[in-house]
Length: 292
Image (cartoon, rainbow, N blue to C red; front, side, top):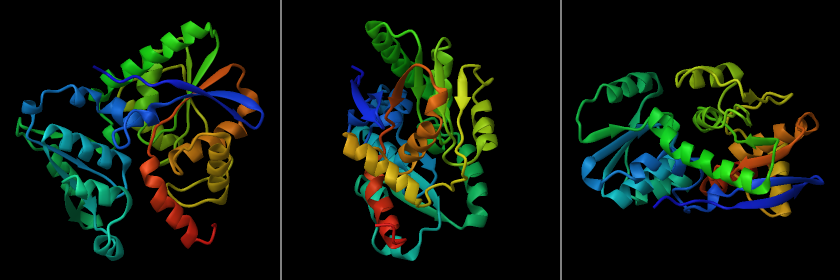
C-alpha cells in the first residue's frame, strides 16, 4: 500500500502556507525521492539483483536508493568523482549512512567521470537497473502522479480554487510531472543545481515544457551547495516557525519564493522534498565558513 502524507499549516512572515509533509514518510526514503522511486518500491524483490547510479557523495538520492536496496535485498553500486581524502578517511552525513546500508562506492577521476556514466548507461543486464542521477527518469512519473492525486484531493476538500504548488528543482523531475498531472494548477519551482537554462534543458528531456510550470529565479546568483548567510537565515526562520527544511534545496526555494511572494495571488502548497539527513554536513560547512 502506498504511504500518503499530511498537510500542515505554517505561518512565515505573517503569511499562511500549507506544507505537504512528504518529509515524514520515512527518515531515509522520504520526500521527492520516495515519490520518484515508488515504482521500484512497488517492484517485486526478485525483479532485480543490482541497482546502479551516480552523482555526488552527499546526494539525498544516493541515500534513498541505498535504503531501498537494503529493504529489497538488492546490491547497490554508486559511481562518484574522487572523494576528498578527509571524507574517505572519516565518512560523514549521507555518504556514511549509505555505506552502512551496504552501498559499494566506485570513485573515478573527474576527467573520466562522464565516460564512466556512459559506460553505466550501456549496461544490458536485465537483472541490473540504472537509476539516473537524482531519479530523473520517466519511471518517476508513477509516484509523482500519486502525489498529484493527493494534492488535488486535498485542494477539493478545502474548496481551494487558486492553488500554487511549490517545489525546488535539481533536475526538475518532480516539478515537471506535477505540472503535467495538474494542468489546471500552477507549479512554481526554482533551479538549485544550475540556472534556468540548465533546468529547462533537463525538463525538456522528459517532454514538452508544461504551460503551467513557472521557473522563479533569485536576484542573486547562488552556486549549488555553497553556504550563503541568507540561506542559513531562511533555514533558521522556517525552523523557528515550526518546520525544518533542508539547507540546500529548501532554503533556496523559500528564499526566492519570499522574494517574489507579492506576485502570487492564491493559496500556496509547498511540497516538502525531505533531505534533512544532509543538514548535519551542511551545518558543518557553515561553521567552517564562520557563519555559525
